[in-house]
Image 1 (tube, helix red, strand yellow):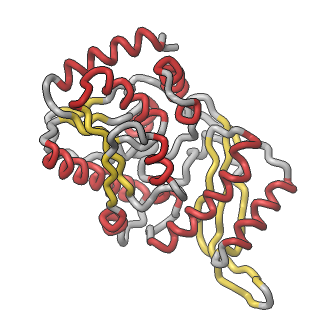
Image 2: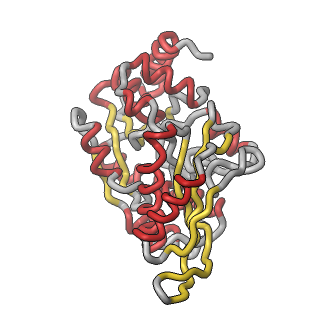
Length: 305
């Protein structure tokens, strides 16, 4: 396990060396990884740090507003790029291709913002499991295997790339970050696009966003999962009122883990699962069925794509 205090001291020195006198744009999503990086970089390079939050249109319900509230004490640039990201995903069904499309679009948006700000470096919250899974062929994380080969940045700074998630949380505590940030559930960089099987559309994202909100509302406080969410996995038949419908199938996933390398499904009482299914099908008319995923990692991954 990492010694948080020693790590903080070393990381600050490394960021200073890597950045030099250059301005640095950083991807601040509000998760623990990027928040730790922001806190480290702020101590290392001060006003030369330019934190940017990109609203991709693939975020959870109320996410952008929440990020603005949580980071109200710093100058955070909000970039609205929903049309760009949905456009880059149009017609793509393959999971790897989707991750690469999102990864490239992130870089292009950051390059554009960097040119405006006169920044030369990009700082991001890559952690060790991202690298392991990308290099091992499990899946390309948008900030590792999903990144394009040609970039305008002179350097990519990744202060927590050698840490596991639980170690990042320990560093967050040592930095004095709010508990809400320190223990926040992971959320994939490609956002809700990897919770939609097949082509991503604005309609599908709206459905999975609402279903995801219901799942988190039902499970987060009661079970404190490592991760819980909803995914849109296909179409099936159903009956609503007196009508037969051809509607969406939503999968509910809730797991516990230590470092995301392995995970076990949470044993949720059947009655609670029925309630979740009833809420989702009642609140989202186009959903016909709800299922609960009981697969561990391995053989499954935590996310669906």
